[in-house]
Amino acid sequence: MLRLCFCCVFFFIFLPNNVKLLDNGLARTPPMGWMSWGYYMCGDHCEELPEKCLDEKLILSVVDAFYNEGYQEAGFEYIIIDDCWSERKRDENGRLVADKKRFPRGMKFIADYIHARGLKFGMYTNIATVTCMQYPGSFGHFRTDAKTFADWGVDYLKVDGCFVGEDVLNNAYIKLGSQLNDTGRPMVYSCSWPYYIQYIHSKVPDFEAISQHCNMWRNYHDVQLYWPALKMIFKHFEDEYEELSRHHGPGKWNDPDMLIFGTDTLTESQSRVQIAVYVMLSAPLLLSCDMTKITAYEKKLLQNLDLMAVGQDPLGVMARPHKLQESVTLWVKRHLPMKGNKFHSYSFAIVNVDSQPHLIYFFPKIYGTDSKDGYTVMDIFSRDFIKNVTFHEPIEVTVPPDDVIMYTFFPL
Ligand SMILES: *[C@@H]1O[C@H](CO)[C@@H](O)[C@H](O)[C@H]1NC(C)=O
Ligand SMILES: *[C@@H]1O[C@H](CO)[C@@H](O)[C@H](O)[C@H]1NC(C)=O
Image 1: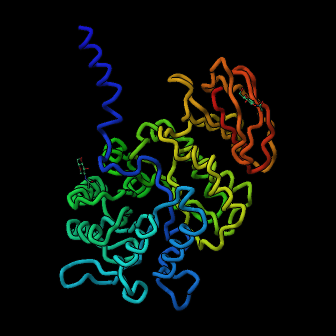
Image 2: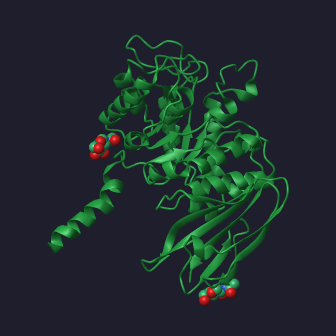
Image 3: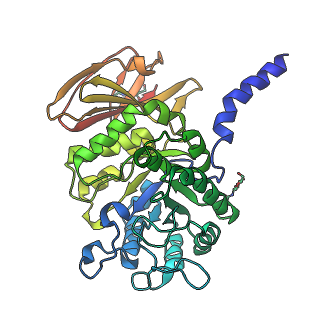
């Protein structure tokens, strides 16, 4: 009897986390890297717009920046080519071919260059017969394309969801995923599936299925290069926290889309807010910019290892939002290290998206910091241990306009 009960408990506690996810061993923490779309978009008009050209030179420049300028050490790993990379026609064997002008040495060359530096290579396709920008898509070619990507040494595949109905979305992502698995090459599988279900077809995404077949998935509209777009993303994750957090964790991540660093869009405080919210969400961190345009301040944020450690925490918890005032949200994230097997560390990010400063007062204890031995508190942006607190002390702080205060409490 006792043994039976023990088994039941074991079953219920461990089954949901250990079985129902894409079992390719990848993305155990949220992927970090760079992707071409946000800033370069299609990038195929290289003569008219050379500064927005998606070509081999651009990709290698990102690899070199990751390798030489400290990004790799901070965790940035995947370099991902988005739409518009191929020739307009498949070859005589039905295989995709890289654009001969922009990628003269082909994709295997790029993959080798990336792998030689210990980094990882990502590519893109669409689930329909054409991509969102009308290049050849993978529908009808899942097996061939999966094999092509595997042969090239691809480590990550973003699969878009333009131009197909709800039924195709709900079936084709599963089929393509199984073809990727059949290649024997583990590839992070990034799906745009729920975005299209929710915002193009106005239906409710089946996150249970999505999280079993994809390593990460886009939830919401493409990020745009302006601050209000970020506020809408934060609001989406706040409003849908209950549903999204249920399907989020190691190997399966909700993806709020790219960081807009290096695009001259954000003030310093706004860039703090974007990185803080993404790290608190355990979101993938994908840059999209000319790496030489990242400001010294943005680089400091991206290479703040205390901040990155919260984002890459192995528990992969999505922070819970608490609305403290109309425009002030307190995000609370439980993470490692633990004291014994009882007391977690906690991060608190107090985000003010108003144009006025707000005075905030709250008791961290209510949100879980209940160790009687107290906590040592780090200001994550200055990286200073600012004080030790007992478990019943309140926090009182003024958050400037469009800004965030972020503290991590480590149990003493
Ligand atoms: C394919 O799926 C099986 C079963 O889920 C898993 O054990 C294996 O690691 C997967 N292989 C790849 C390359 O993703
Ligand atoms: C906090 O407590 C630790 C452990 O007792 C101690 O080493 C540290 O100096 C204290 N920090 C502050 C800011 O008081």
